[in-house]
Figure 1: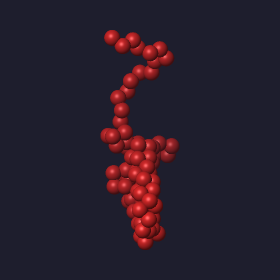
Figure 2: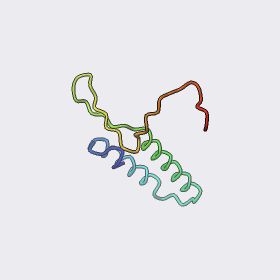
Figure 3: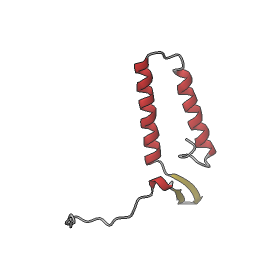
Figure 4: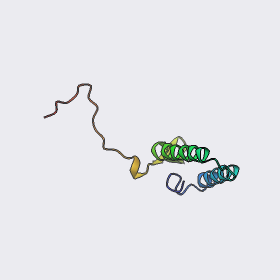
Length: 87
């Protein structure tokens, strides 16, 4: 939450409230199987957020400043329809 929504107080608060709500809703769960499933779901959500969310900030009308995390930046490799020969 803190990494994905850095410097976005509204998103940080919304995420914290949702996380707390889910924990409170299931705080009396005793089934190990159900707890494992909920943890699996939480990890999947974390992965989706970390790998797919890019922060953006409106800086002008019709202009957004994107602030991708370093973990999202990939090497820019030119696309080619033909595979390269391995040498």
